[in-house]
Image (cartoon, rainbow, N blue to C red; front, side, top):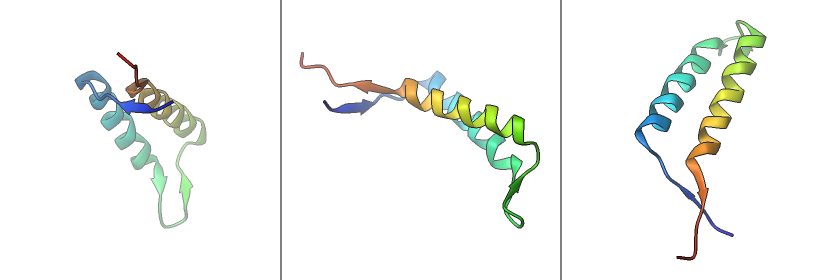
Length: 60
C-alpha cells in the first residue's frame, strides 16, 4: 500500500504556523522547552496536520 503526500494550501499553512510555534518553544542551548504542556499540544497538532496530508494511493 503506497501513500501519497497531497499538500493543499490549508494544510501547508497550518503545518508552517504550528511548526514555527513549536520551533520557538525549544531552547537549543539547554535542549529544553519553555512550556511542556503547550509544546505537547503543538507537537500533536503538527503530527495530525501532516497526517491529514498523507493519503492512500488509489488504483483508479
